[in-house]
Image 1 (cartoon, chains in turn purple, yellow):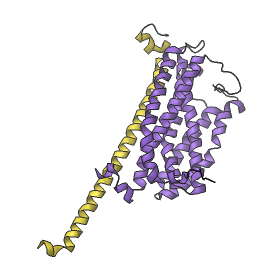
Image 2 (image 1 turned 180 degrees about the horizontal axis):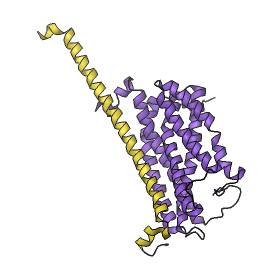
Image 3 (image 1 turned 30 degrees about the horizontal axis):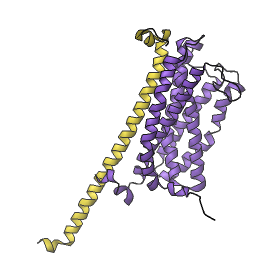
Image 4 (image 1 turned 90 degrees about the horizontal axis):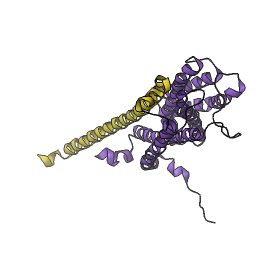
Length: 249
Length: 72
């Protein structure tokens, strides 16, 4: 019987992942632009003016994508944290660390664009409402992860402590998602649902989905870029790093 | 097409502050993030190159010390 299993653990070594990440990086950067430009074009020039909110609703294109990403990135961090704790692979901790600042950024952007949308539509920048508060907690979870891991000198211990925080904090993600159903809230319900056909214009929906894809590609590109720096920092005393062409040059 | 003129586009139907405040800050954050990572990579590469150069210099000095007779 032929063994067709790929040895995934081979890629789990920082030494073999560093060049792979370098090769993938420009493709994801190009895809970010390839999805981002049509998304902006649809969002600003094709999607019609909203009947109730006028042009102010166009914040949706960035707000929804940023909010989705803030939740997705946390789930991916929790996934890598679980892999790191179960298999004790070094790369998983580096991936978790590489994703955290981008996740924090999207959580901040979700709150920021939400405030700028809330002011003209609800009359307030902020309310202590279930959806907004749980998203704020997500932002603090990201900051807590970054603070905790940077407070520990030993990278492996930092990975383990941060990984536990990431895994415990992941319960907050479904709370954010279902908050608009479970509690009375000022925030509107889910913008896109699998259960019912979309209530918005198709061009609006496509603009949102393309923007979400753009943010996905951006996140992957930036995470690969950052993980390469982290690999160099943590593997600085190894022979393979000192033999890299970018170091020797 | 939704807009009659560029100024109409930038006015965003009276929501300019909110719409451009959202998109502008988002763009600024994403660009800043990329620049910060670029600086992080630059810093670690510079430090690695210095370390390598120092190691080579130390090797040469050690080599010279052990072969002092040959040089004299």
